[in-house]
Length: 401
Image 1: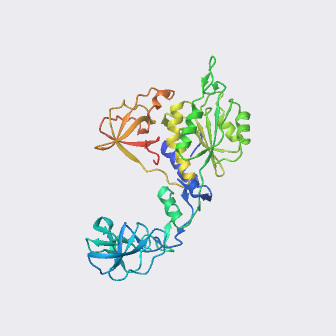
Image 2: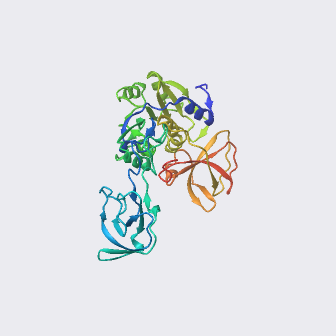
Image 3: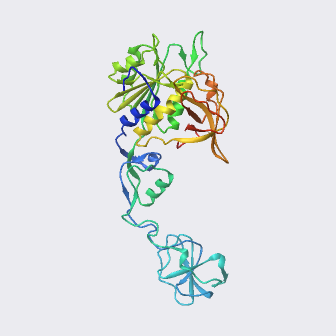
């Protein structure tokens, strides 16, 4: 790939897929491991359940007994050791989860009637109300394999077999630098020619949604030394995002600053709208993206390219294509570029439906209100309502997209 030329979206995606490597695994507590990718096989240390246990509240008698009246010989509570099987004509009251004697069968409490120290079982006792030792998990069995993603269910299973920490791939650490002497903090009153910072809060929110670890962001002017110095002072990071300065203007110096930091520029422009002046660079295992300054370009470039790199760093595969029904006609796409149109996706009786939102240009910040998808449109497309279109899902409605 020639970094000086205009690259296709497919070429840049292939560059990311073929070059970004998963970060080394580290020990993580179960709480910190949620959403992470496992870097080791995990085996059970014990049977689950660890003993025969009652699945219901009820009464236990020796297997083979029938419905009828029985003397209540005692009670087994959760945490008690299982006693000997009850003698003929006797029953033991059991609670859900309590250990039961070997050779027992159970009648649910709903099918029993107590009178003093006797109980009448209205149905024949059944062994199916007993969860047998090892019926769920056998000691030594493989619970999870390398590459598994840890969710809440996996955390519960790991805790059940005594595992409090695992080796997993950590969250990518992302350094974000905003550039531009015209930018002021979002809580400041802009002076003549100044604008509030929207890309800083936008990227921070997007990184949180992508389960990355945002590092303290910083703001610099357009100078090469300012940007390079801020990065050098920042400490360790896995991915660098630079907002602004990626185009071809006189003061667009992101690529020069990255080269001064020994990053190799792999792509300087991508044939897409929005987000054409996207810079992709690499320094060893670290990656950098120079994002075009307009906010819609930021949003689109993040979901199309940056989020993909974050997934690869975190040990996750690239997302598979998602298709939806187009909910309304779109203007014809003119030109040779691909377009990523802001949209709202929702599930309907016909499946996933995506409705395009009003969008003027890459600086139209209002177009991002309510966006949870981008419609991917080929060059010279003529999209009409009902057509199947490829979408990139994003936002809190689709947290695992």
